[in-house]
Image (cartoon, rainbow, N blue to C red; front, side, top):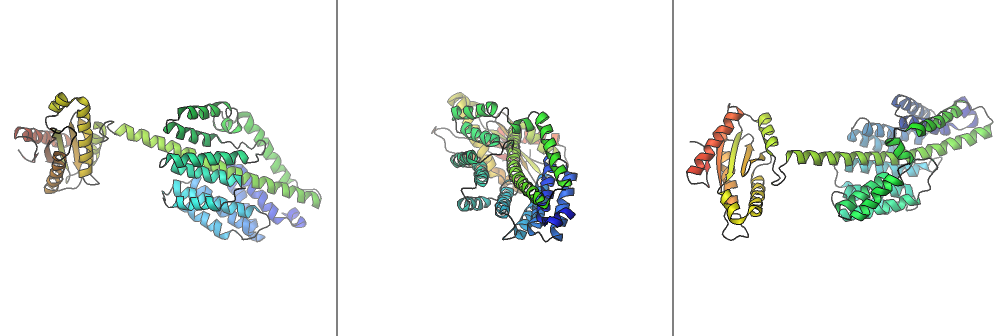
Length: 447
C-alpha cells in the first residue's frame, strides 16, 4: 500500500487485488478469493476508485449465481454494478465490462429466470455491439444460439455459426485455454437434430481429435494434472511480484501495467468460461429433464405410464378426490377389423382427448392396454360426473378416416372419501364392469 502511494498507482493495486481474487476463484479457493475481493473493495473506497467499487458488486453477482443458485439476487448485484460503473475511467476496460454485465444479466434472465422478453434485448445488443470486439460477439451469438436451440433450429444454427466465426477472429493468448469445445458440441447437436449426420459427425470428430489435447479438455476431463501445476506456479509468481514491489518508481509503474493487462485478460477469459460452463450445465439439465419425462410417460399415448399414475394416486389421494377408470369399448374389434396401426392411432387420439378435457390439476395415466385412470383433485361427485361426461362425448364425436369407425368409452367413477387406494380402484373397476354390462358408452357412479 505504501509503495503504491509513493508511485501514485492506487488504482493499479485495486486491479491487482481483483486479479488475485479471480485467480483464487479459478482454483476453487473461495476463502482467499473473497479475502482479496474485500481488500479491493475497501481500497476502492479509500482512494475513490468508482470502477473498483462497481466491480465488487459484479463479483457478488457471480457468487450469487454460480455458488448460491440465486439468480434474483445476482440480477440485483449486476444492476448495482452497472449503475455504479463510471462513464469515464482510467483505462478502457469500463466500456468492455459494461457490455459484459449486460451479457451476464441477459444470460441470467434467459437461462435462470425464464424471461422470454430477454431475447429481444439480446438481439438489440447484438445489433448495437461493436463487431470488432470478437470476444463479445462470440459470447452474444453463442447465447442466442443456445436460446433458439429448443425453439428454432435454423436460427440456432445461424447464431452458432456466427459465434464460431467470431471465435476464429479472437487473438488468442498462448496458454489461455480458450476453446470452442462447447460451441462445437452445441453446433453438432443442432446438425444431429436436423438429421445432418455428416456435419454432426465431423464436429464430434473435431472435438475428439483437435480438442483432445487442449488445455480446456485436460482441465475438465483429465483432472488438470501437469497443466494445473504449471498454472499454479505461474500464479504464485504473480503473488510474489505483488508482495515484493521494491524496484524503482518506473519499474513499479511497468509492473502495475502488466498486472492491469493480466487482470483484463483474466476477466475476459473467466467470463467466457463462465458462459460456457453455465451453458453446459443447462444442456445437462435439459437432458436430465428429457430422461425423467421419458421414464414417467407412456411412449405411445404420452399420458403418464402405469407406474407414475399409481405413484401419484398413492402419494396424493385425498378425501375429496375421485378416480375414474376408463375403458375403450370394443377395442379388440377395432384391432381385428382395421388392424393394430389403426388401433394404436385410436389409443393416441383418445389419450389426447382425455388430457384435453380435464382440468389443469387433474392427472391421466395409461393403466394398461386400452384402460386409462384419471385422478380428479378436490372434486365433488357432480363435478367428476360432468368432466367424465365431457370426456365421453368428446371421444364419441371424434372423426376418423375410416368412415364407419366410431369410438366410445365406458367409465366408472369412485369417490375416495376415507377409503384405501386398493379399495378405490377395486370399486371403480366394478363400476366400469357395470357400465359395460348396461350397454357401454356411459358413466356409472354406483352399483
